Image (cartoon, rainbow, N blue to C red; front, top):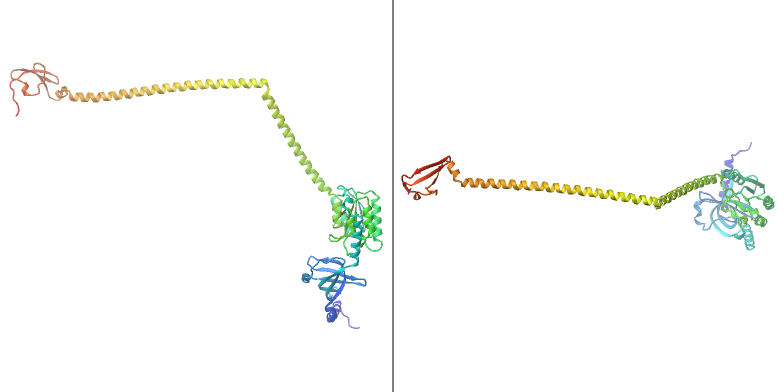
Length: 422
């Protein structure tokens, strides 16, 4: 058997062939951008196409420094880079190093032309936009019966409000016959008198979404009596159906949130409002009771009988106060008299004691000067016959009578002789 090679060996061989081809190492390719996706890593994945075919391409984040515009669907660009094989998948693609804007693609030009025509006709005027019902009970959906769009709408609708009825019209959303299928679905559901319609599909390239850029679909949405929410592709995808609809949702999931009100959150809000209302009612009731009590007290205050009783009470209180003041004044007067009497007695006693002390002092002084004191000390008091005190021997004469007074009596005597000390 001839040599058998592994898949990796074949892919490696082809990669080497590409690497040896000088033309593929550096070339420029012109084409229309399709399926453009910005990855979270910063890489840009897109497809280049023209009338004869397509070419997968990627620009890594490290090469984006020279890109001075945002790459988008429908742009005509010239991409410089290298064609190489990705060995793991066995696919070749263009690794872009530079991208220059060349012009706009055919589909994008068709899009702009139709958009301008319909806008001039007034189909996008805000005055024709109808409000989306807040509490929709029936929601019509024009989309493919399979795929992520219908699953997302069903899941979110059931989560927000399981009582809302969803009615699906299974339509073709891309390829031949898609625009007629979408138009028929809109008209069919509009005739059923539903509350709101969701028209849309999941994401894709500009070619995949082109059915929603057709004039027939835009006119069907504009003529629809039921409010329409468009939900085509991802948030960055914009179609003519978005302009014609009453409201644009960035995704089918967002359309479900806009069309179906959150019943459970509504219940929570309703309970909160109920509690707030009960609290306000309680507060109002308490205020009313307070005002009633105040009015009752005011009425009692101005009642003549109450006024008379109040005056009597004040008079009695004044009388009690007067009697109490008189009693206090009398008590104070008695205290003052008692205090004055006490002070007078104390003053008289002090004065008497002082007088006694003065008398005693004077008595002592008088006693000190009294002849009797000297006599009592062994001395005598001598007088002549006439009772005059004899103080010197010159006053005495021999033979004359004298009287000598001692402490216990008197002695009569006659002067025998007189002798004067020299």
